[in-house]
Structures are given as C-alpha cells and as structure tokens.
Length: 416
Length: 155
Image 1 (tube, helix red, strand yellow):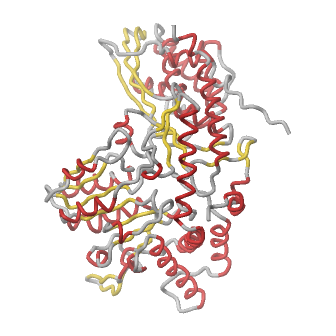
Image 2 (tube, each protein chain N blue to C red):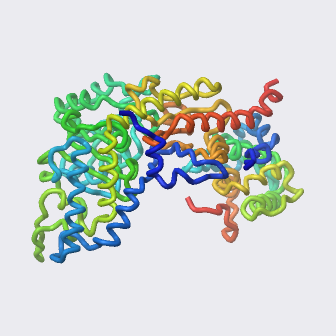
Image 3 (cartoon, helix red, strand yellow):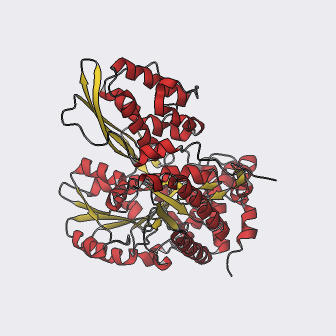
C-alpha cells in the first residue's frame, strides 16, 4: 500500500501554514523534518502527566518517566534492526554520537601512525571529530574520492584501507548528493583489515529500511529530528560488547556505579555514556516518531521517496538551465537533490523561491570537501520526505523559472 | 483572493546584474600596499581585495571572489565608487552604505551605483552579503570604527 500524502499531511500542523502568502512547500528535510501532531502531543503529555527525573526516584512519576524513556531504546533498536536495546545510547545528535566514539573509543585505540579512512562526501560532523582525534593521537586521515556521478570510488577506498587502518567512517547516504554507499561491502573490507567501521546514518535512518546486522557495521549514528522527532536527541548504536570495551565520554551523575574519594566505577551498558539528566521529554517524543514511521513502514517511505525523487530530477532537468548533481538512478540514491541553476548563485535562487513559499537549502551543506571536489562554492538542495507531493516539485520548478527570468534580463545585452 | 506576484526586479536591479556579470576592477594588483580577504562561512561567499594607496589617496583597487550576485556586485560597485578618492571619503561612503542597508536609510546621492543595493535592506539574511566587501576593505585599510557595527546579526 502506498503512502496517502493527502491524508498524512493532516497529521502535520505546520504544513497548513502559509509563507509569504503562499502555501508552505517544505523541501529542506535533509536539514530537519517537520513533526506530526503525535510527536508534539507526546511532549506536552509527558510534561503534563509524567514529568520526573529518571533512574533515581521511587515515586510513581519517576517510575513512569523511566519506563517511558527506557522504552524508546527498544524502539530505536528495532528501527535499525538491532537486537538489543542495551546497545543504544542517547546523545544530543549524530555529531555528538560521532564525537563520543572519537573520544571514548578513539583516544584509547589510536596511536601515532595509525590511519583513519573517510570519504570526500562526508558531512563536517564526520570529518572534524576525526581531525581532532588525529591531532590528539598523531593518527593520519585518508579520504576516498568519488566518481563523476557522485558515487564512492570503492576501489580507491579499498586501496586506502590496510594494516594501519584502525577506523573507517563513512556516510550511509550523502546529505548533498543523495548517494547511498555500499556499506555491506565496505564492512567486509574494514573487517578484513581489523578496522572499526562507523556509519553516519543521519540521512539513511529517516529514509531507508536499515538493518545494522545486515550492514555489518560496528557503530551506527543518527538523529531524531531528521526523522519526525524533536531536536536534541541523537542515537548511537554499537555492536554488542563494544560499549563495554569503551571508556566513559562525560563524567557525572547517572553514569556511575560507586563513587569513592579515590575514584569511581561505571554504570553498565548505555548508562555509562549518559551522564547527567538526559533529554527525557524529547527522547519520549522520539518514541512517538518511531511509532509513526513503523506504522507507515520504512519500505513504503522509501518507495514514496524514490517516486518523488525521480519526478523531481526529471522535472528539474526538463525545465532547462539546471544541472542535477549526484546519481540519477533512484535505486542508488535518496531524496536529497543538489542542483545548480545556470547563471544564478544558490543564495539568489533561495531568496527568490522563498518568496513563493518554497523552502530549499543553499550553501555548502557542511560538506566543504565535497564542494571543493565538485568545484562549486555552494549548491541548491531540495530534499524530500514522506509528506511531499509532486505538486510541490512543480511549485519549486515554477519559482525557479522566476529566478531564471530575473537573472536572464541582462544576459542577452551583456553577452555581446 | 488575488495574490501578488513576488517582485524581484527591484531587488535585483539591472545595474546589480550588470556588475555581477561584468565585475569592474576584477583581478589582482601588481603592487598592492594593502590586502585583505574575508568570507561568510554561512554561505561561502569570498572576497580578496588588493588596494594601492599613495599618501591618503586610494589609487587602485582589484578584487577576486566568488559568491552571490549581491556580494559580488557590491564589491564591484565599491571599487568603482571609492577608487581615486581619499581614505576619509571611503569611510564616509562606507558609513552611508551601511546606513542604507542596516538602518534602511534613504540612499544618499554620494553612493552612486551603490544606491541600487537599497532593496537588500528588505532581506535581512542577505545584508551580510552586501557588506562582506566593506568588511574586507575595513580590514585592508585597518579602519577601526568599533562604535559602528558592520553586521546587523551574529554568525
């Protein structure tokens, strides 16, 4: 059964608002998605009926809040095909999840001369924590390139991974090109080299059915706010046993077992990495987002996005003067579509389409290495989600026609 | 219900597009006395500026950059407007230009072509684009008017 967007859009209050006198056309879902009423209500329900600190009270509210919070661990695990809720750590976002690994695993396991292998299509959140780790340990960074269509050069990646490689960290889906990387193949290469494989799932967990066991990665990180959930919640999954081998990240309450003047022992499982009062309300509301996605079915979400992405690529290219970056085959890409409008800078594009109520992203998308590789300072990006409709693509194309017209006015006169 | 078509010909006046397509004083100077570069990390606009000063007269200017029509046309018009004048005059134009954008002041005739950028004042997120080259000029000439903010918003 395919997704009925007309019915589903009624679940999202913000989608009925107007922007600049036009219906909002929200095409910036790779940055953050909108929230269904169920998520918004879960937040208020928690504060109105259950608010208490977790893991440290005997009273009824504390018990209810703890159960609600801990229950989301199992939902998050199920969303990515992980068997064990105790392998899920809640963080603030994907960035913090990656930084946690860089600190808690990286500092203990990397030495001078070791190598970290990344790709040119990584988000800054999957580059900068490793640069900081390299500066602390003397490890070296290596970057695998991409081909002309924006696909990972798997042969180059293979050639970069060797006995010095301690860590491979790659995105599952590029936030700029939409490219889906062959994680299972990369996992095999990393495993042979004895390297840890971290997968940045910020763009895949919201849009694809994910099974970390089938992928074969060691660590998988993603963010709630890019998948209908609230901001301020990230997830870190580590393969069974790995969390126990890692040192703590932040110290404080909740992450300890026994504290003595001369030192302390650590809490078990994910609690070791959740120092202090966590983001209880938002984690609980994230549970409502995971329920919403489960009810729809991630396979249906993926099918819907394949259709609208194919429609968008075709419509953009047919309209003329537009170049779409990244793979064109929707089987190997997701719904983040970067494009350029000939002769019009992305900022100017963004300003003009905003007047039509169309929200897209213009900029380097936190991927300056990729921008340099593509030899562009910035791109426009439209990114889709389960509530987007083909008529919204049409609204984008119409607004882009205005951008082309405005900037075409002096073209003919100056091109003497 | 009638809905007005967005009007962009006023923001993107032809003189702006003309400077964007055919920037004046684009390139580098052989012997600049002052140099600076600046970027807007949010959007990736970049300007590198060379200035040749004799006494207190700005004799030559050249810039290299990439970015949106607003940032690049502003740089082109800035070099055209202040080249040949004194540093004091450049400061005066800078203040008038900032007032036009930040305070939405009526354009001053002394601004010349730069008056065309007045429409940017209606688009607060784009004001930084128009001011980038002036921030670079300020740095190149070590102009310190800390009492006069160049940026209406934080990064």
